[in-house]
Length: 315
Image (cartoon, rainbow, N blue to C red):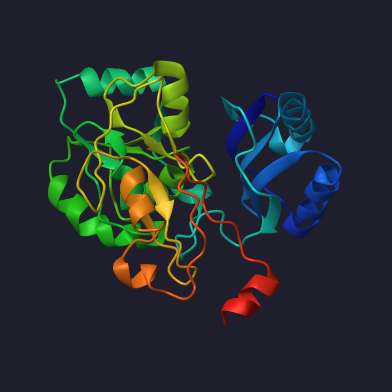
């Protein structure tokens, strides 16, 4: 069976996001579609997977609502579901930046289409600073050539990167080019940078996913981290590996969640080391009584949420 993986977001006014959560859940109740969808007064942010006909039905259903007309669905094919369940939730913030952003009064960075982005990376006539607006575990396995890679563990810490940007962008003629996985983090971060007085801001429209679909892997190195069961994907078949196993230092772009349920750290490992370490990120975790079974498969999916009974047994 063939599936579509959809990534999308859309800014629109939702007067009652809790009711919209209910409406979405009612639509999904009898359909084989899984993923994560967050709704707020600002709009929607979602990633779902479903059999192609079901995915098309959801696209048509959502787009039929005037509030969601024009949603840009990034579509990728896959052989199975990429999520364990369907989760639809209300969130005060679509993205956790920990302070309000008024898009209407500030605006965001100017959009560059995938083709325009590639042209800007090729153009040497104007100075640019290329900024990866993702967590470091994402950029570690793949990024655009020459990009600044902030040592940031969560998006809410990106405002702390402001001083570094100011030092790199003292020349008012410098263009700042922002990119992220699907585009939404650039929307929020570019609005924040505008609040702080930054000029000449540009963002990759539709993010890395859309760039890979439309332009392939030119100027891109490595793999793309995604927040689903796939964990990493290649752009246009590019199999380059730029990261390394944390144990033996051999080239590897495979992420695993630590088998210690009280750690669950995401770490890079080759398959042989992951097997020898029993799926754990450290010797301490390997000795833990909370260690979950490790199957040693070539493609290790993230560990599923423990049931209440399982949690009770390890406490």
